[in-house]
Amino acid sequence: MLIAVAQTEPELAQVARNLEAAIARMEEAAALGVKLLVLPEAELTGYVFDSAQEARAAALEVPGPEVDALAAAAGRLGLYTVCGLIEREGDLLRNTAVLVGPATPDGAPGPGALLGRYSKTHLPFLGVDRFVTAGDEAPVFDTPIGRIGIEICYDLRFPELTRSLALQGADFIAHPTNWPLAATTNAEFITRTRALENRVYLLTANRCGTDRGTEFCGWSQICDPSGTRIAETGKAGTALLVAEADVARSRDKDIIVIPGVYEMRLWDHRRPDLYGAVVAETLPTT
Image (cartoon, rainbow, N blue to C red; front, top):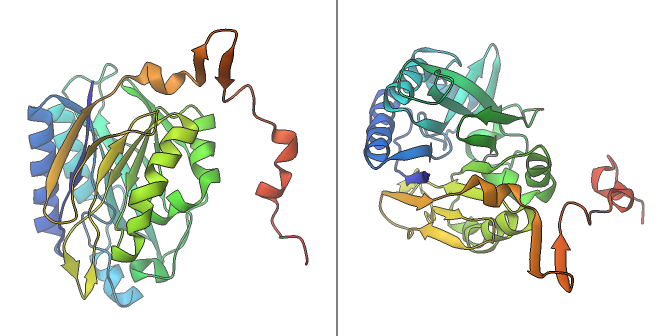
């Protein structure tokens, strides 16, 4: 099947404009036969807010009318879509990505639905993340096209999260981001590494352009389970990247180079008994 990421340039707090642009990208992807589309972090709201009050004024409820509109478009188009936004949940703000798609059991066009949401669990001191509350769950969502995990931007720096999603059976990891220029090395190295070490498809959708003096590095990309970039774009300009995917490749964690001579079984060869320090809440004293 075909999968895609969109590199876009949302405008801060211009929700109606950003929603219209997101749906246009969805329609473009669906016309090409795409089944899974990932849009950037904070796609509907923008990211570079200067205060919690300013962010709250632009934040959206989930579910809410904007997410309902996304879901309706996803259902009509038969397109599973991951889209970022700043969520207002009572007095809390969260950096959230929603998964919307057809409500039909086989993924055919029809009614749309909010199928899941993920709130960013690792928060840098940057932009709106200075004012949001971290999420505390990292689920994988089962759909007719495969199992979808979500992580947002800075989350990718923490290998434990991607590994957790892969161990839960994720075939695709949707990665909406707003990487500034200082994070270009993430796009250069970490994307390929996370896909390779977990043998999953990683779909990184970054924004481009400049917002309040912050310049974004673009370089949206799709990496396959071998760690190969099978689609990528440059720093500047909006783009829609489309690539072919085969979920069977994500589900095969064995690398058989020469049967009986050179074999690597990435899941079977794990040694969880050695990894306790990875999940320890405190670091050892020095």
